[in-house]
Every structure is written in C-alpha cells, then in structure tokens.
Length: 172
Image (cartoon, rainbow, N blue to C red; front, side, top):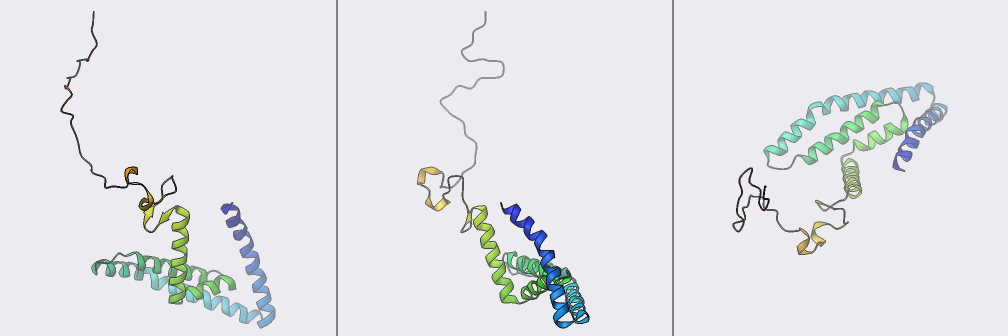
C-alpha cells in the first residue's frame, strides 16, 4: 500500500509542479518565474558545494569531542536534501528546500522523520521490538531479558568418546 502511495506521489508531483509553474508565470510573468527557478537552482548548487565537506568535518569534530556523530550526519543529509530540492526545477520543491535551510525547521523534520522510521521498523526507545510485539523492558525475567554470556562448556558427567567409537552400538 505504501508503494502505491509513493508511486502516486512520484507521478502527481511533477504534474502539480508544472501547474504551479504555469500559474506563477501567469501571475508574475514568464521571465520572473524563470529567474526564480534559476536563482533557486544556483542556491541549491551552492548548498551542495558547501556541504561537500561540511558533513565530514562536523562528524570528525563530534567524534573528537567524544560525542556520537549522528546529529552532524543527519543535519548534513537534510542540507543535501535541501540543496537537491532547490536545484530541481519547480516551486513546490524550492519551497520545501528553502524551509529545510532553516535550522529549527530542519531539526524538527529530522526528529519527526527519525521517529516515524523508528516506529515503523519496530524500534522503541533504542530497543528492538521482537516478533512478540513486546520491547525488552516489558518481558518477563525468564524470556531472555538478562545478559548474554558467551563461552564454551563441557559436561563433566559424560564420558567422552573418540572418533570411530560408537556408544551403545555393537558389531557382529
């Protein structure tokens, strides 16, 4: 069902973009509309060029400060998305791209999208939700919620048999 929605959006969005461009051309004129599209495209190229190394440097800075580099990576990814939307011709994509250039809006959209992805994938407060639909903190103690200890063991009450020795099998 989600694929059908995505497919419809991918078909409808260019048609809506064309309709908005035509309406803008009627309202402000062809040359003004063309100037807006070219200016936002140039702004998109500048954002993409600026983000080329900014995400990497922000990630390295966070690691050097002992913090997880998730925030700079997500912020940089949304700035790259904003640059791509600005570069694409269309006033709706340009508007979304300009909104993503605003820091608080970008962080709100990032937080919302990460929460939505985590909810859909079964992640809850940093834990994986198993097939039983329960997160780790709601399970009973006997349901594997304790620590996992790896190692080897040997039963002392069993007699070991070497290769070729069959226990309990007699040959005639």
